[in-house]
Image: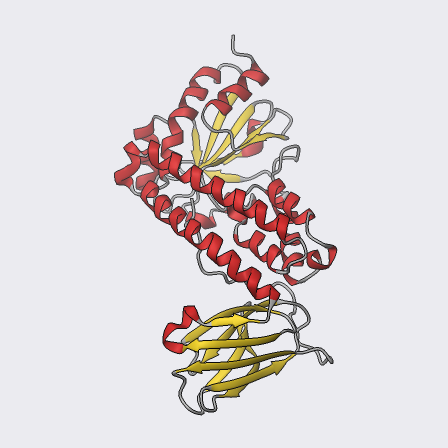
Length: 364
């Protein structure tokens, strides 16, 4: 799995301009500890080099005023910009108070969008921190042989995130923060889940900055969905021989994305081995696609785990060409491709894999 990212920046996909308009936001600040005549400036959180407006401090106070087209993510920078306060604001009348020495505790009032953003942080930051900690432990080789309980904990936290995400979206269908939340948490959901949540939002929010970004992400993620055709690829096996996915046509083939360094992948391998042993004589095989970055650990893991099927990799880590083509952003992942080249199932784990193969190939 990739580490869960706790920094809430999203790179821009669309122009995010501030046009002249009668409507405007006003930020009145009264913050202790700011140097007299020091600079305070607001930058676009999606493009921090873009300064929206700036002012100087006068007796601990400052005032910023401009216009934004819709509520969005910004950074309020103090002095040299090392101290930054995340804001999610529209054309609101905002008041900021507190002490610069306690940046995280500054009070921000007057913006409904920012209130939603604060609620998002308070709800999800602790859960994501827990998820990161457990995920790092699972990925550590020292936990490889004893991570049953850790995987249970990880899945439990993921379920909590999903439940809280559903609540947030249900309660904030017209908030511009909601598509931002869906983008940040997308790696913990499958595409149909994200698409279902996105469909709950108002059309105005769907057509906003983050809404358009998310819409494109959803469209891109449809690549490799169940019912779609496989995307053919060729990659070298452990001996350097090129292997083409389409050469397996006529068989059921499980394309298994994994890596030697991935604890959950190694934990899942015995289930894949059992399925391969049971169904390999019934027109079924496995094609392993590794996201390793060195040949030695990759080949050793294949040997240690008894993975006797075909394996390929370009040793480009997360930039593996096949993973990029299928938009793989976390592992383990797999897709079961039918004899006709169509994807019939995805992310079959443990008994689910055997059950699906029994349904398709019979268990007798």
